[in-house]
Every structure is written in structure tokens, then in C-alpha cells.
Image (tube, helix red, strand yellow):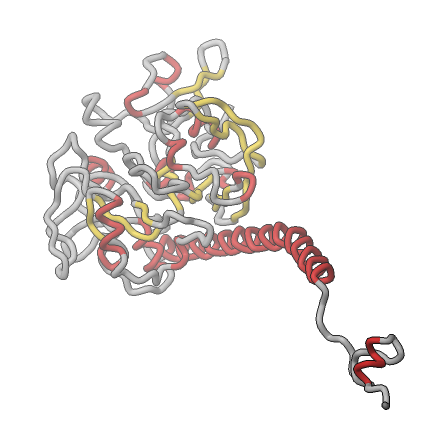
Length: 376
């Protein structure tokens, strides 16, 4: 009887596979090796890709700030070389008693600085509600902001995870009348009368230097009976030594500070800044997360409570400015700054201090001033 092919295969005389065909399946070991190699490559590449993505966002943030600076310059050029003021009604009575020097909405409401940026960029915003919504808290504002577009990209950092913030001014102060900062009912499509602590909220990642665009306000004036200079500045004593002078409610009653010239907020006049290439005009601002409501005046940076002229002095010295400056938005705590000469770039923390149970930056490189006055 002829031996069949199957029998020959069992006897080891011929291969089990038909002629011309090859085995195509992977063994389990080969499959596991391939998976391990792919996982290793991913673990190597992902951090590099993440760093590249974060760096791209940092660069885009700088580009937005520089565009913001160009728009601010355009707005100032069209308004007698002054940028928009940011203050309450008390400060306006001092800086613009007849309401003719700065920009106002259709109902006489002081325009918030993001709206001024929009106008400088050629965006047709005429009122605060073209940009933001009226609310007394971020929780309420966030619900209403879902219906707002984000046409004003210049005030948004792509790394900002919180988004909703307020420019602080105009707002209603608790120590003043309910209508001391916001006029009328606001947006005709969403009428909302003025109330204490009410302000405008919008998608906003940056904060202005109030020492530059502010005026003496209710805090620096009404509580003391007359307006004290609100910026940090240095004064020389009788023996020639330098003395640090604070402002507002922290105004020190010491002779060199009491008689010193300067320290007044600049009311939008960029040409009065001392050494503008080292003074921050716009800072990255806002919170890192949504766990708490932001402090009062979330997106304004000022030196009134600081022990020195630099950003680190403001963060450490003022009671809540540290909560207005993000530390986790960019890798290594980097922040972008637009300077008063309208150039921009990143700064990074190089030293920290303990404050309110956590570590906050006390020094940056390069150093950037908040106070527009000559440091000592």
C-alpha cells in the first residue's frame, strides 16, 4: 500500500506544511517582545512630545501678549497717548471728573481694559458686555460664558485651564454704593442691575499693572480722608539713606515717605514709567485651578502692599497677590510678561518663600518691576 503524505509527515519524511507556503503567525514570545519595544519607545517619546507641546504653548502665549501690546499702543495712540484707566468711581472723580479723558460705554460705564484691547485690535466692541458677562462670582459667570464667543484671542493663554477671570475694574465695591462702579443694567439681552461685588467676567488669562493704568481709588483715599500715593517707591532720608514707602492703607507715616514726591498711579500714561524695559505692563494672571473662588480683584497686579518694587516683592508682601499669579501654567513656573516698552518674554522663578502655608516665588529671572518708580 502506498504511503500517504500524512503518514510520511508523521514519520518525519516530508514537511507538514504544503510546498511553497510559510508559517505567518507570531509566537506569543515574539508578540510580547514587540509590545515591550513599542511601550519603551512611547515612554521615551511622550515626555519629549509633551515638552515640545508645552514650549509651543509658551511661545504662542508670548505672541498673544505681543499682539496685546500692539493693540494697547494703537488704543493709546488714538486716545491722547493714554491707555485705558482701571479704577473705581472715586478714582475717576480724581482722574477724569468730567468723564472725557477715557473710554466709556453707551450708558457711561467705564470700559474694562480687555474692551480697550479689542478696540485697539479693530474688533467692534463698544460695551463691556460685548466681551464679558456681569456676575458676582466666577461660578455664575462660567455658566453664562458658555454662550459667549472667544473673539478676543489676544487675552487668552493656550495653557490657561481656568479661563474665566475678571479684570477687576470696573466693579462695585462693598464699602461704596451698589452703583459705584457699574452703570445701568448692562447687556440689554441679559439685564442685570448693579449689585455689591459685581464685576465683568470673561475669558481672560492676563492681568494689568494697576500702578500704571490705575488711579488713587477708594482704598487709598476714602478710608484715610485723602488720597495717599498708592505705588511702592523709594525716598531718601535726611542722611541720604533709602527708605521703602508703601501705599494705600499700608501708607507708612515716616518723614521721608510723607514728603516724597511720586508714588501716584500713572492713570494710563506709559511715558511716565521709569525704565519701561524693566517694568511689567501685562502679566500672566489668574488661578491655577477651579477649587476656590478667586480673590477679590483677580487680574490686577500692584505694588501698594509690597516691600519692594519687584514682582517677587509683590507676591510675597501683598496679602493676596500671590493667589493672582499662576505657578503651574507653564513648566517650571514660567510666566510671560509684556513690559511697558511693549516687548515681551518669559521669566522664571529662581527663589521661593513660605506664605500662607505654601511656597511662593520671591524672585524671578530676569527681574521685573511692578512699581513704575525708580528702585533703590
